[in-house]
Length: 343
Image (cartoon, rainbow, N blue to C red; front, side, top):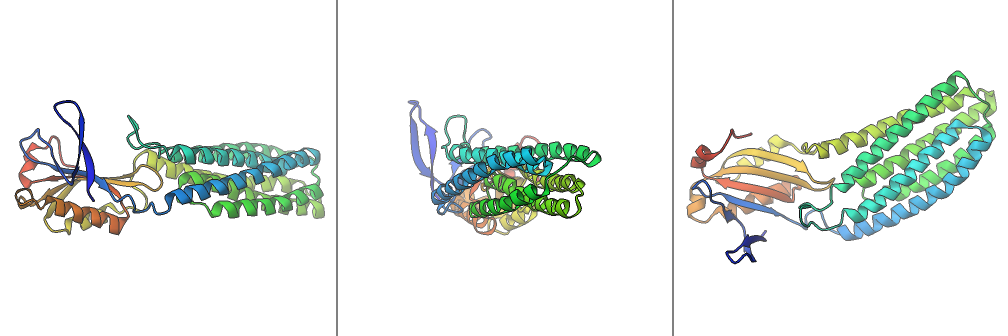
């Protein structure tokens, strides 16, 4: 794919010219470099998807806020920690959805100035924030549940069951709405996990309410809260872990580094691959950079652009990698490399 590279002329003005590869001086050897991608790959209907995601997020947010207010009133009146913990979780749900809505706008801002990748990674920060919030709320619920397990208060079982059943219905609807959004985005997934764990919480609360109604064993309320906290910890840790991989620039979990190297080496004229790096800017933007040692004739016969097309086509077709920065080198260039090649 041809792309315009910026070159600054002697008059200080920027000239733009289509190019597959550039010549970089400094060592007396030519480096064929290219930073490119196939923008359409993985972005089909992207704007439509973002618009739909926002609609689903807004619908879920209004639904959650309306029910949360009613749940707080009933929780205080009935003395149920399970209901109050669910209300607290729903407050964090509403916050998560509100942040997710804001991030869908921020992440679409174009790259400019020092922000060479734009604000795509804001969705990763949103996912991390959602994961940490879930963990904090789970810890608060766990501490209070243990206290009430030791000294159980009176709990009105009927009120707990009624509100929990309504909550199951509300959260099923909210979960259905967010399940239709693009959950490959860590931003959307974070909001979805909030709602899903709340749904499990209401199921546990309803079960606790039934036990209290039948047996008058009020410790069932605290036990239900502990189970809810355990589910929240599992979901929260998953979000923190996945966000951490992106922020620490680890290769995506689905990326097989050895397989990527093997595919590039199988291409004609490619003799070696070193300094291979694979990371992700956002949830859906994998990036590759690498130094490729190619046959000398590629530099003398003008075949470098063809080899470049082959490499990028391979990365796109086999690994869904749309953005790559590749540097081509002749074998004799190894003597000019500073430091040791990183395989």
